[in-house]
Length: 342
Image (cartoon, rainbow, N blue to C red; front, side, top):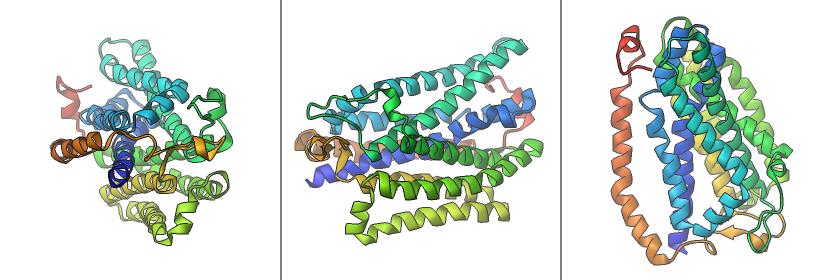
């Protein structure tokens, strides 16, 4: 039981880290057609995330790998139940990566415009669909006793699921605008700051609505009511969200970005703590739910995996810290002139 609990929260942590890191480049891609007024602006935006976006997505592979290895039954049911949504996410992420590389290969306005549209779609669609998917997991998926999904893609597009999608998009767009505020200068910097300030109150309103809706549409608050000390997670998340606007006013943009990152991690753990021990709850019958106990690998497998994680995750974290430090400066004209630039 202890190993299952550890891996449940490691599973949640890996998803939180993915949303925290990849969230800002998905946000920049979503803002791309709105803030990129000129071709130079667009190149600045792409190069603001260029050295980091593919490293950020390592956490998606890690989260998926952990789901497969630690909770194989959840993996099989999840990827069959949410197959359409997950494939759309996969295709969108592939399209985005290809767009970054291909956009500057041909000196043609029409060519660049096509790939610009692909960058937007490849960023907005995953942000929305990840939110829809996780909101539906919080709400419960209609799976029967055999783990068979009793619904369609449109079943997932219910009001609560769409609200979760909107929340994720706003979180990521705010995160991306703040990152762009750190990495840019001039008019683009001013537009990024202005965008973050304008989106923040909308984000706060949607977050309040989502927290309220979760009380009626899900059973997430059951664990919080049983253990009131867990409400500290919600409190920290709310304080982090409010801190974004405070640091924006102080023009300390990295602190605002860090507060945004903490908000995303807190929002993810709000759901993870509320779900425990359910990993994939059934909306048809609680007995059909997949939990950390009935869907995990053997104790020996979990033990070996834990040793591997303890040894190698610090290496991955160390590499990412080094990468972020290496590319911590603002994107300049000289950077755009380099051969390695997008």
